Every structure is written in C-alpha cells, then in structure tokens.
Image (tube, rainbow, N blue to C red):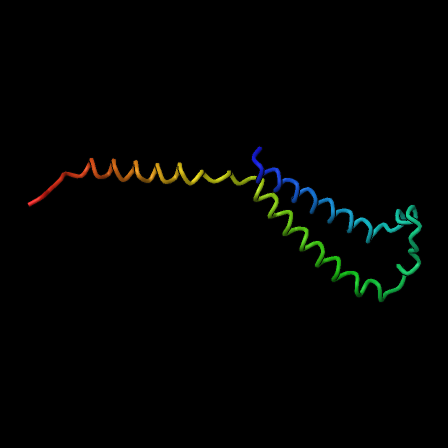
Amino acid sequence: MSKDRALGAAICAACVILAVGYAFTMFYPQWLSILNVQVTWLSNAQFWIIATPVLLAFLAVTVIGAWIGWTMTTTPPPKPIEDAVSETKESETKTEQKQPNSTG
C-alpha cells in the first residue's frame, strides 16, 4: 500500500471512529460516568436545541473527512512525471513515423 493510501485509510478510519464515538456519547451519555463527568444537565431542553445542530455539523465534517480518506485510499497513485513525459515523447515519435513526409 502506498503512502497516500495508508494516510487516506487512517483519515477515513479516524473520522468514522470520531463520528460514531461522538454520536454514541450524545445518545448514551451514561458511559461518561466512568470518567466522573456530570450528566445531569442532559435533561434540559436547551441542551438539545444547541446540541442537535452541533452534532449535525460535527457529523458533516467527519463524513467529509471520511470521504476524503476513502478517496485517497481507493484512488490509484499517479504515474511518476518521468514516465508520463517518456510516454508522451514515444507517442509523438510513433505518430510522426506513421505520417508520410510530404515536402514540396
């Protein structure tokens, strides 16, 4: 796996893990009690008025990040510039050899 693909896979995995973890924390905050975090404010309606758009924005950012990572992972690496230049010169040479030289 090339360096770009490995980086893309890491970005994709990190974004998916962050999105799932954040959404899980929003809907199942009981597990935060392990960290001694107070969760009594969750019953307040004002929290949901603010938390819902924040959750959607965070999920949108992580989906975009996951999409970028997936694209980097599944896209083949580009050809080195030297190969592309040599292929172009070879095709130009072949084209010139096929055309008859009409002078005069």
